[in-house]
Amino acid sequence: MLGVRVNRYRMGEDMTRKKKTRATRDGAANYRGFREHPRYGQAPRITGLNPVEVRPIAPGMPIINFIEHSGQRIPNTAIQADAAKQKLVGPFGAVSHYFDLHCVCSNCELDFLFFAEEQKHWYEDLGLSLDKQCEYCVVCRHRYQTLKQKHRRYEELCRVSTLSEDEAFEMADCCLSLIEATMFLNPPTERVRMLLNRLPERRCRKLRKHLRAAEELA
Ligand SMILES: [Zn+2]
Image (cartoon, rainbow, N blue to C red; front, side, top):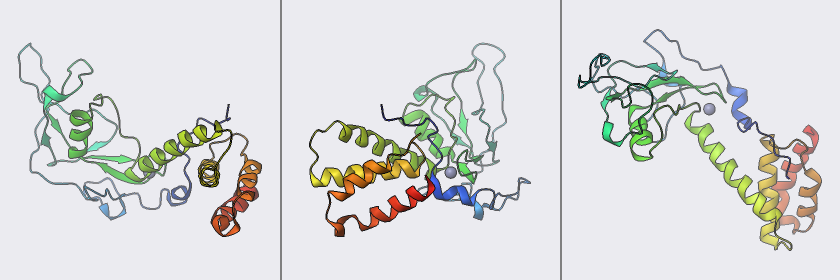
């Protein structure tokens, strides 16, 4: 057992930026403070499509509906959904359109948009269920994925009986990332020190710096 803590998302530097750039919610929001998505950008993507919700009240009646997430729908950003590709959930099953949604990241608390096209990708290409919400901004999601990979690799390396120099370096690096993300109940800084002591000094200067900072916080 590694004693890894469950709080997956307390991930460092962005915590200091929280609440500084929250946009107004009056419809004329300033999207400059929003988290930028590398593919979709920062501001809503206006399509001019703004369908009105129609709930089916009889079998066979056409359905027009949207994802009921906690995010705020942005008018005129709708795109058509392909219901046949969705995993159906809830009493009405599929949705007919996706809108850009204004959300707030549960980790760094920055505003971000969960884009209609992103939703189409999640719910039609990746096969995610329609009730799967987007709680985190793209940066926090990426950080979490990286941490997950480092955690997996760290556990693998824990099982290796004789570590090569490269593996010792990698293990120290993974371990420090997990310590910095506060994922250990008892940060194994001593273990990192032992790993670094096996490496040539020129190779581990940067990691030593991180280790000192981690020890100061411990
Ligand atoms: Zn975030």
